[in-house]
Image (cartoon, rainbow, N blue to C red; front, top):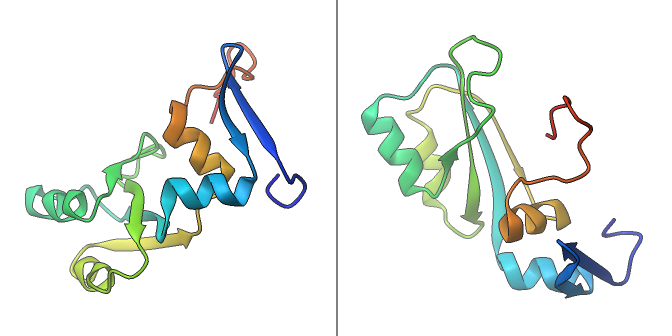
Length: 125
């Protein structure tokens, strides 16, 4: 969407909650932050949990979805913070993904994961 539109208007319950150029909306909301997703090979112990939370990551709803004991964490991290990769070194990392936030991130930050377009009985994620 960011590449196709020069202006977006986001509506919630018929009211405008955002109006502007996609790049401007995202830049104003997130600044120099990158969106991180960290997947651990097991559930973190209390010390590891505190370390993840101190980085600004929160456990995702998708944690342990496959029943394998994995734990997924997501959050916005300042891209200039060089301490983040070092803080992750001692964790049981399976994978991590880093991306620049987009309109989907803006939507989640503004109104949460609530989706009105999901078909009944279908997962909205």
